[in-house]
Length: 113
Image 1 (cartoon, rainbow, N blue to C red):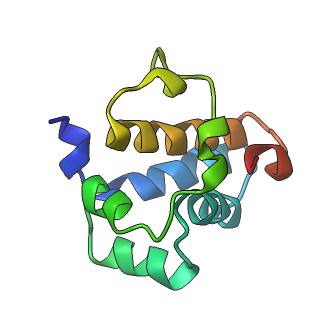
Image 2: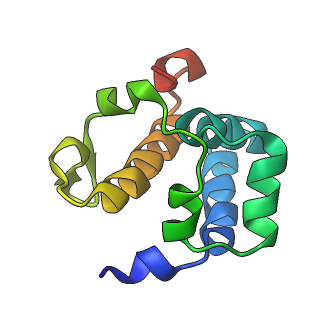
């Protein structure tokens, strides 16, 4: 089991926002990406953060992974996201990749395939 699976999502969430804001993107865009990928609504996302759910619970309780998530391709931490075998790790890396694309200045309509 990977250590990140038990890491609280609430500890990483502010880092996603910081990464985006350093590149003049917004918390609303970060939230939009998370909601698109996971199927949570804003209240559901807030509830997961307040409950300090770990990544495993965050993704297992997500209403529905977006059907276009399989279109997310590219490299995160030196690994191609489309080649990751572990389903949970792949979902975490999908989210990382989307946040990276936001920070790189991609348009939201391109990020949200």
